[in-house]
Every structure is written in structure tokens, then in C-alpha cells.
Length: 121
Image (tube, rainbow, N blue to C red; front, top):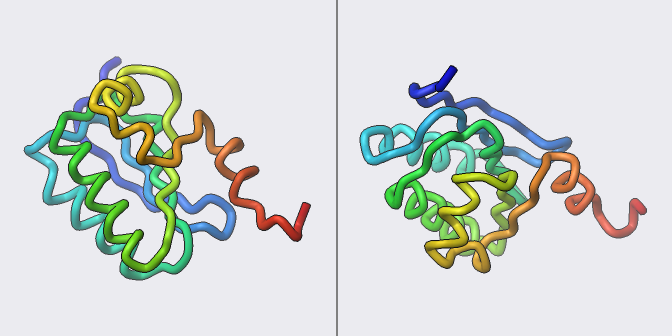
């Protein structure tokens, strides 16, 4: 069954704050996504995780929102960590050329492993 309605949930990864988007992100829900990202970023510190594992569709306005979040975090030398498996959403990142600007992991486990501080290994 295809999910069309956007769902936004807090989705920390261990101690790292984050947001999970599920469904579809397009211009119609842009303000809602922007507000959720801004709130999550503003009320946290350090890296920020954006989980897109359950996202089925992302248009160019959604890509712009991710790049905006990356820029907001970058101003404070914070990293945006994107969890996005292979599929149509990841393909949008590749086709648009932003994949090289993002820190993308295929699974939450892979992202969690990368976010472990070096002195904890």
C-alpha cells in the first residue's frame, strides 16, 4: 500500500538527535518539513540525523530543504547525517548532484556505527 501522507517523527540515533520523514515530501508540505527540521536543529547540539528510510517521494523542493538544513548546521560546524537506502529518494540525490555534499548512510546501523566517537572503539 502506498503511503501518501507525510509523517514526521523525532528519531534520535542513540544520543544524536534526529527526525524521521515518511511518506512524501513535496512543495505542498514544505513548510511543515522546514518547521520540523528548524525546531529539531534549534533545540539540539552536535550532529543531526535525518532518517529517510520510509520516504517514498522527494521532489526538488525537498532537496532544497535538506540543503537548507545542511547549511544551518554548517554555520555551527555541525553535521547533517542522512539515512537513506538505495531507491528513488537516494536516486534524486545522485541525479541532482547533491549526494557528494551529504553524509549519507544506507541504514540506521551504519550511521550509528559512524557516529561513535573514536575514543569509544
